[in-house]
Each structure stands twice: as C-alpha cells, then as structure tokens.
Image 1 (cartoon, rainbow, N blue to C red):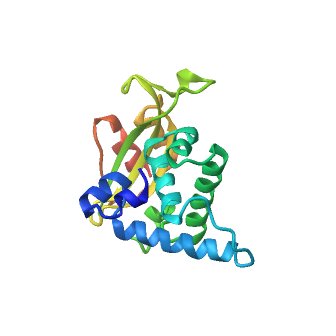
Image 2: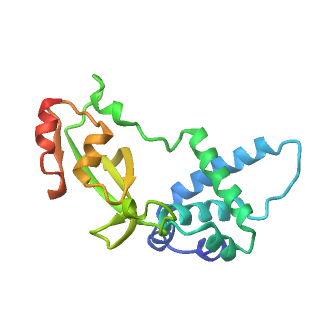
Length: 204
C-alpha cells in the first residue's frame, strides 16, 4: 500500500491501514524530513522512495512483520534499499525522542502518580525461524510469534513501557522477567494470564 493511495482516506480508514492517527503520521514525516535535510545538507541526492512511503513501509514492517523482500517488491525497489530505509526511519525517530516512552522507572518515581495501570501482552506472527523454532512457537496461536507486554496508564491510555520475548514464554513469566515495579498503592488490572501478579506487586 503506497502513500499516494491512502493519503485521501478518512481518519478511520487511515488509522486502520497505518496503525497511527493522521496527525501522528504527519508529525513523524515532519521529523523525518528534518532528519533527511540534516543528513544530506551537502548533497542533493533524491531518495528512491518519498519520506511518506519510507515511513509507511516501516509501519508495515513493524505492524505486519512482513519480510523486507515482500515490502521491497511492493514498492518496486531492491531488498537492500528497503532495509536501509526502514533502519533510517527507525533510527531517526528514536534519536528525535518525540515518541519515546516514559519507561518502567517512571512507575516508581516519587513525583509520578499512576492510580491504575493496565498490564497485557499481545503476540505478533513471524516467519518460521531457521533456528530454535520451538522457542518461538506459540501453542495459543498455533504458529511462531513474538510477544509484547504493554504497561498502560488507564487514565490517559498512554503506553508507559514495553517488554518483549519469544512467543512461547508465558505472560506472567514475561512480567517477572521485565522487572516492572510499581508503588504499593497503584492498582494493577490484568487478565487471567497474570495470575499471581498481585503477590509480586505486594512484595515490591
């Protein structure tokens, strides 16, 4: 899906395709254009893909875990080019810091108050790994996956921090290994996959 096709979509359709609001997408484009101008201030080399399409390709990769080969074929460029584009987009956005998460240490800072936080995990399908396939095989999804744990402030619905592991690992084990600590008076809301989390919360 190229940007030229989706740019006139309404807000709901745009977010459904890209995974982000149009305002967020536009802010990312603004940061990337600034980063590109700084990187190529002495050269007028034009990228094979527009900034918008480089960002869109990156979002496709992150959300759908498509291979570089598939994305490259979709945009009509080489696999090495799409790899460099995605890496550049990721590194530029990370360096800017606008979209950085507060981090797990934010949960125990004395000047930070979270009344209720939500803890949940989701699994993203991936290609079958060449090695250690059983490590990534999720019995729940019946395929190979990566698992992402999200800690969210229920009041603002903003993500505080993320943790990652292979798809086979249990949600509760991921929580323990992520070393997330919260204040005793903070309420944790979880699903059945986190049975036992209250005891750990009480200890810390």
